[in-house]
Image 1 (tube, rainbow, N blue to C red):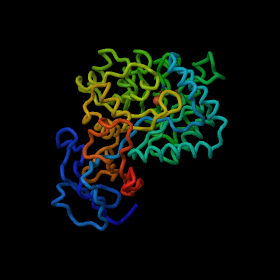
Image 2: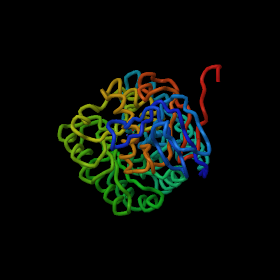
Image 3: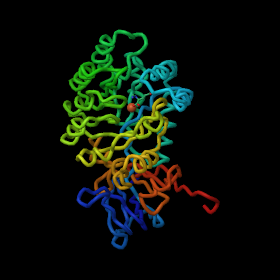
Image 4: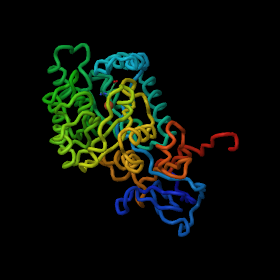
Length: 398
Ligand code: NIG
Ligand code: FE
């Protein structure tokens, strides 16, 4: 961590997500001071204090780093053929996960480390500074323990997802696998994890099985989150709310009662539009959730099956274009919303005291994230006060 202070000056639009201001808490013609890895000051550029290192943002927009609250990064191999088959009409089903389980089990620790580090670097280059990472492609005690241990080397937001699908060797005995995931496997994984998650869905785990794993996880000191209502309008969202899960993720098929339950709870509805894009499913109804008063987060779900994209900007663009979110709502959901889904107060905003996760866009406003889909717009990134992405200049002039 640098002990020098940095002054980012000449910010055209500073998105603070300050809850005391409306919307994104935008300050125009702003400056921001970083000290000891934290945001020390924000305000009008004209009143900025002096600092050791100056950085001229050149009128660009500055945002909190993206908080990607849902990703599966401990895996080996890829499933491009499965994607191609889906694009010619085959539906997405939970069973494809087993292909990645086979590849992951056969990979060395260092192969898995190299893959996760590659993806994290890819994410940082796109402005993501906090990443949640799940296990779930090991599905034995040893393999799941290895997955959460390797994830814990690179992030504090580690999720134990032993109950992802029933592995082939337990085919036909989901009850026995559920027991394993709630006992020995959980005991091996809990020391490395903060969260427990279950894929509660047809073809994976039903509500009783999900409850068994989640309650055991809670007893072991983990906090719950859930893959809920991705493929069918099942009981998962209600269970997530009942257990005060930090987040119910996917929320693609919701009843009115599900929407009401989310709106009157602390459980964030985390929408993963890259999944619907990559599985040709209908998009979740963000407008319905927002209008009911639910808290909405956006995340990538980056994984080799249902969505192999690490781009939060892509999620924002789709959420704005096809899920009726405004650019401001989508940017909030990809930053402050993600922080809420991880029950974090130190990230997802740029007010004094926050971790200095700063994303300088090569654009004058946050709207450009949706307005210029598919275009790399990350200009520079600081994570905890350390510059992790240097100034990116496109074209020949730089
Ligand atoms: O969140 N839905 C369950 N798990 C992942 C997909 C994993 C895979 O297909 O490999 C998801 O979409
Ligand atoms: Fe997922």
